[in-house]
Structures are given as C-alpha cells and as structure tokens.
Length: 491
Image (cartoon, rainbow, N blue to C red):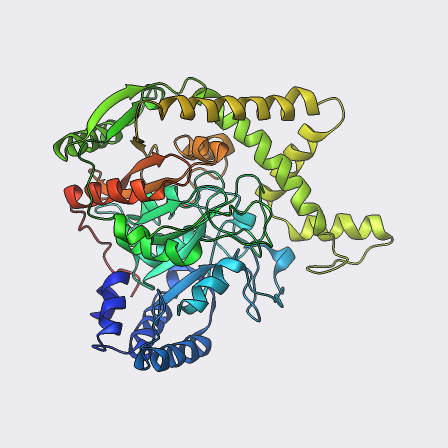
C-alpha cells in the first residue's frame, strides 16, 4: 500500500490545496490500488482513463485557486447512481448493459465540486440485501478476516462494494444508499464511518429506485470529518426530485470539534434485545461511558413500537420495490429475452434478469398490494410507520440524539446465511426504524470483537440535524481511537 493510500479524505484535500501532491499523482496511486485488489470484487466497472482526465482538470483548477469542496479527491461511486456515459447496472443482469445518457444529481454535484471517479462499486442487486451476496456480478469479499482464519467474510450490504473499497483503502470515500441500513450496517462491519442523512437532504434523482419513500444517498469514508466533507457536496435542494427538501445546507465540517457537553443522549430500552452478543452489549456500555466523560447527560428513553419495525419495513419496502421494478419489462431498455407474445417476453425477461432475492421481494410486495390484502398488510404497516415516527418525536422531546449499536453482529462468512432470509433480514434490526421515520443516523467504528472484527456504534438525530451527529460522532471517534486495519492479504 502506498503512503498516499493511507491518507484521509481531509488530509488529501489539504495536501492538494497546499500543492504538496497533485490529483494526478494521487489518482494514479489509487488506480494501482484498485487494480491490485480485484480479488475483493469491490469494483464492477473501473474507469482509470476517465479518472486521470478528471484529475488533470482538477489540477488545473487547483493551480488557478478554484478548488471545490472535493477538488482532486479520488472516490468510488455505488453502481446505483446513474453516471453519464458509464455503465450503471444496479448489480443486476436486467441492467447489465445500461449506459445512462444523464448524470444523477448527487454525482453531478460531487463532480462539480471536483471529485474524481475511480469507477462503479459492486452492490446487492437493486440494493436488496445486507451482505452483498445478491449481486449479479458475484459477492464482494470483505478485506477483514477473523484472527487465524481464511474464511471469506461479507462486507455488509447493500453498499458492500463501497464499504470494502474504503476499508481496503482503494479510494478516499464512496457513495452509498441507505433504504433500511445499507450505509450504516456495512460501515459498521467494515470498520469505517457512514451516515444516512435525513430523507430529502440528498436528491434521489438519477439513483435507481428500490423503495422511494425510504431510499437516501449518503457518504462512506474513513472518518467523521471525511463524511462531513462529502455530505456537504452531496446535499441540497433539487427541483427534479419532489421529495428533495428546500432547506439550506449547513457547514457540516464546522460542527466537528464542538463536543457534546451539556447535551442529552437517549438510550432506547427496546434496543436491548434478548440474546444480544455480550460484545455488542459491552461496546454499547462503553459508548455510554464515552458520552458521559465528554460531558453529556445520558437518559433512558422508550421507542415502544420498535418491535414492529422489521415486519413493517419488509412490507413497505417490497411493496414499493414491486412498483418501481415493474418498469423493467424487456421492452424499453435493459435485458430482453424474446417470447411468443408480449406476456411471454415479460415473463422470460424478468425471470432471467432478476435474481432470487429481488424476485422474492417483488412477490412479497405484489402480494401485500393485491386486492384483499392491501388493508390487512400495506395500510397497517403504514400506520405502524407513523407510530414509529411518533416514538422518535416523543424521545427527542427529552434528548438531543440517541445512541445504539449499529449491527447485531460482526461480519459473517460468505454463504453462512444465504439459505435463511429471515436471519439475513435481522441484520437491519437496529437501522430500519431510522429509515421508516426519515431521520439521520451515523455509524462510527468503535472497537473490535475477540476475533479482531470491527464493531460500530450508531447515533440517531432529529430530522435535518446531521450537524449534531457529526459533533457526537467525533466524540466517539476520538474516544475509541479506532486504529485497526485489515491485513492486505488480497495483494
């Protein structure tokens, strides 16, 4: 690993602005890292020529003193974001040859801010998964391994390629999307930081849709500060997205270092699950102690409808997915398998194009929206969603943020849970409530288990109060002093 690959995004940004390094030099170093780590399967499309061209243009702007927020910084882009002229597959065969003629709002804003794209990152198909094993292009391999074991581990999902690429230092940061925990959960199991912003903070335009009322883009990077810098560029109102909030974007980086003295941190009692691993319980207790040491008051709060969150999520999300994915029919774009008539064409194209997990969720979603079941399932789940949001509102009358674990377990072995979808869905038990309520949540690496695998702590904030999460996240980062790194076994 080169010395440049060990930089944080903030460190690289500052070095570029002081002209200690050039973007082309930095980008070349990361291109070599990506080429040497293909065994991780983190990237599905590498764009070295494009990256070098973007770096050259960034160097020209830097020399003129016209640096944007992300000027010259090499990043990876999750393959759910449409990138003009660069293949965008959403991890699915049905979009295997789709090359967008337009740019997603989030990536356009990042490129306008000077970011350099190294390529597109692997992901669970249509963002449906918690382990990055449902991708049509094969699973992503975590750069982490258990002590004394060569068993390949999952990097979390659905943003598993993003998590693995950042953790293995193949890029300085990456975009992710979070529908039920798909930024925070992989960030936790890969030992990096990731934030799911408030619903509406980042435009969804040009991001391949999974569940439209839940999806939200966000950054994944090495540090809290790095995520704050990225989110600054990713955020803002977009008239092309009717759910984009017309709210000013604060200076997120300025919030870092302000601490949590005098603030109140809530601990939801419902998150103390039966059978929770002792290492997760211990880490949570340590996080509470860190908050107290930093001058925060810690109080117990209740989120009584938490127990209904997973079942409600796995009704709402598949229902919206079945609607969103109806457009992939083999007629207008994407994979086409010819049939005897149009119905046969639909059936054959969708059967060949969608993987098992996506088919499962489409079937669930179609079922809960069908006549006779809509009221019993979908409407009831929406009512539960309202109650979950109300729980958070009442909790935030007493505190400024909530502290919880991010994931109920560290990374597990590839193939260990693929035959048990319920067990897989339980990986999102601490994260789905945040999506159902539309709130921001950040995961910060806070320790390792006895096998040397990363564990994360989650902070949940009020709507559009990401700044408080960056303040508190920095407290955890400083206290944890997380320095663990995966061995570079893939080289």
